[in-house]
Length: 230
Length: 172
Image 1 (cartoon, chains in turn brown, cyan):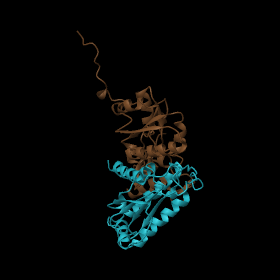
Image 2 (cartoon, rainbow over the protein chains, first blue to last red; image 1 turned 45 degrees about the vertical axis):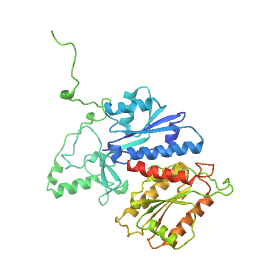
Image 3 (cartoon, each protein chain N blue to C red; image 1 turned 120 degrees about the vertical axis):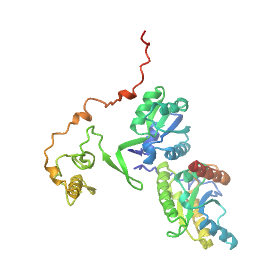
């Protein structure tokens, strides 16, 4: 899932400067699961903002709504009616949600309440950890399912660096050296010989190269309902 | 994550004469609620400022409960659960402890101050402990002054209603 964290209240309040009415908009998917921007978090942030406004003696009408996903038009459009009555929408979706709500809703300002951190897994109760770098060309078939791009502090692809100490990373002893993990995994599977294979350089053009990524499925494309042929 | 505390507004100097704190207590029915009952049966005197919300377990608490109570005009809130290791639902009181700690951070961030929220543990047989917790919290809030959210005298019933609204919001 996409993992995010709420911004500090001061920063959020600052970005709402001049607004008299705000729709705090949650997202029911990834950020609900990572407890950053779901219905509960909307309630908490709305309450905190109301209390701040009262303490500061400012007028702020706060409304609350949570939609299933802020990255799908049909759900984002559900925010239109409530949002358009407000000076701004404070999105508790990830960065995708903020961008897409801006694009779909056009006339209303959309302000982020979260910092989007990474693609991660729920590795323990209340703990989320990065597992994918979204690089566009997955190479973990050669590392037995463990991603060195997301999980190596230097994203290196050719084995551990000199900072790997006793299985941990020199950046922080709490971080496992991913190349140690890869080595141990391949050892346990009896596939260490695979590490000796020479691989072609990774094609980074599939990632951040060439502007924003776009992908499509022709079988899911909108039907062309142009003039029927005579 | 979520740092940036704001210094809590000090209302202790500007507290109106005769300031009486409004305090909401979320009590587990297996321990603190029964202890409050026992305190009554024992004819123990304790602060009348406390309004009790009975919960099946303090593990039911959620940060929104506390925020709503403060929004509604409470000057202080406390949660009273079973002794650690004695929860009827195994670890509800430990969950509550974590949530109180988390909500203290939220209150610090808002500027109300996390010191206005506390967690106590007691058994059903400790009527005196409930009375002591109620008195201690009342005295603490008396010295902190009224909640910075309201300059006017607090309305205990409104705060209690807001706390109950919070419970409802979390259940929705």
